[in-house]
Amino acid sequence: MTHIDGKAKGQFVEGLELAEDLLLSRTALLYPAGTMLSRSHLEKLIKMREANRRLDFEFLLIWNDPLVRECRLELEFMVREILRKRLKDKFCQSFLAPVEEHLGPVLERLLDDDKLILTLYDKLYSNFGGSTGISPFLEHAGEVLLFSLGIALTQSYGTIIRDNPSRLTDIAAVALLHNLGALGRLEQIIRSPEEERQKVYWEACREGYELWGNLEAGGRIGQSIVHLAGYSQGERGFLGRKEWPAVLANIVLVALSYLQKERGLFGEPQPVRLIIDQLNARVLENYLNETAVRSLTTGLKFRDIFAFYQEMDSLIRECPYKSAITYPMTGFKSPTIFICRHTVRECPYLDGSRSSVNLVRPQGDLEPGRYHRCNLLTPQLHIFYEKYYEEIKDSNPPD
Image (cartoon, rainbow, N blue to C red; front, side, top):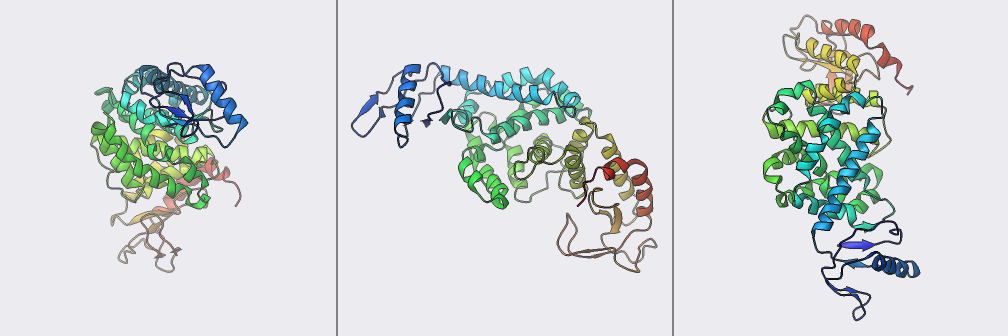
């Protein structure tokens, strides 16, 4: 279903054909089925709409080659324009440079699927010249596509991608279509209270995953979408798995997690350095995949943050009881300490004199309760923190 809006004067697609009669009323025929819409047809509808804002023309179009071609060009232009702008960003230049090299073949394979184009048609042309233009959620999906490819083209995934280049197309498909359901419920999402918007967004995404059954790619990469749908409901079992659908889902998940915060999709935009720190902290909380986050971190040249969290991982492994965990989970609030997750009383390094942390609500894998400081690992971490992480602490805005 397509709508006409009064702002469509500069937008026209050649070759559009009506699938059914376009009526002004039950008895007044404007254009019969089979009419090839010309610019003059469109201009007449716009003038009628401007003269009477209560008019709302809705019509069905025949899915034909001109429409497929126009949608394909529009999608490709959107993605390339996002990349062009991103390559001007100092954080993204080296990270996205390999993407620029591979993007042409990836988009050619991806957009060769007419069913995929048909699925996205409504999101591109459901409102001719609407006030918002291309949906910000569709642009977000385009950015997720680029950043997912950027992560996949780092050294960490070299063998996986080199042995099967078509996997880049799989990544692009999941990234571009991960929020397909939300694209169909924009008004409901935007009108939702700010504190509920993200929940409504992911509910819409989950409902939209059934559309994957209509796509040729659905059978090949549908399991990755199942993982993403489950993650929005608290499922994390795929985070450490090595099979391709899980690897793919983890790559896209990290990309969209970063971009939601950077773009401010559900709140205020956040600084890049802060976001990268938060994502690395989520790895330690077992909420994100380590390889994908570390690849994004080094790809965006935040090697100091990478080194800091790598040191945390190393220290965690020194605990003979496998009970050490960091708190708090970000270096922005205060110097990080190690606490004992299970309060191992026989450990000589447990500071049993007093509790260092009293949680009133869950944080990551930590349940509410009192936790004691680890006197083995905390001093080592503080030495590293003071030596290498000063820049991050200094960049912390005052509370």
